[in-house]
Length: 426
Image (cartoon, rainbow, N blue to C red; front, side, top):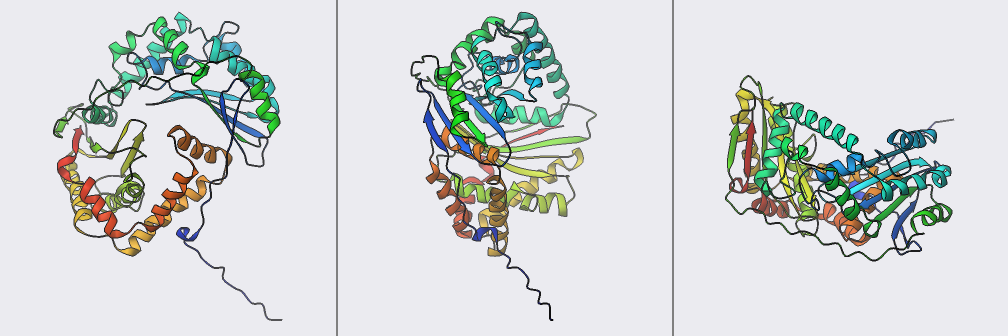
């Protein structure tokens, strides 16, 4: 008998269909929105409570971080130790993180423990007390971390580039200072908690091996109290319109490494240029095979890594090139960054290179659509930005079909040297 071996067909990622699994949208008994996704094979759940409590909404610097950092540090009924014991008893984890726009409280647990753990989370979100002693510990730790970080040139460079782009008084450009941390009071934290973490403004997201029964567990706790529809007042801030500048500073006179940040403002996800820019950015500096990496790491040997990234926020965004190099090659490395920009403005990428970029980008997306928690993250981003599934589908279409000529035109619009701020910290 002759054994016939047939090689399987090889398909590019660009040839696949990309379907975002549907998410269920409901309202709890009191009208609060919950979005839930039944996916996965393990009896686990992730629940996110998302609040408009990021730095955009804080009344004074460092308050948003302090509030999120201290949520689990005691309620009217339990001490911080008792809260941690309750979570650990069921093998669960609860975290609170704040960003530029939102604060997110996240619970990971086995689904069977939801009836026991949801009251604990509810208590934290409605009865946290932020003890004075715990606040002093938080402030000391935050100041210590800041002082350590300020010794690192990359940390200082990240602070400075954001401050130049948005302005130091803007939430996206404001950076932590010791005196601002010291000025935070318990009353500041309590006031922010009572307004920004009010359940009237929450959106609840849930994923895992979820059924209607698990949604009912959430409804029994979070849908049982009356809430009034909340009109979220979004503060307004202006961005400086000054001409981009170059700022070279010395953070350590004996430092052997320089941090380079080259950046400009860029529209957020709502702008029609955003999706094609994801492709251009990937080609330029968004993955290990990018133009920047091939030139400045592989060819010149100036760095271990260099990347460009898009930072889409609710009220703005930026594109930033970031790397650390030896102080003796700061100038030639910066020159090569601008050289790669110029090449993309003047020459079309060839089809083979662009196909590789598209396959990388879409291949990564395939992985993101594989697990319930990563799918939930996709949906959360869409919903918090006011998008539907159609936005996701349209982005996929753009990723697949954008042409070299369109990317060249985009580069001419957004990769001009004269539009970029430059920060070097040694």
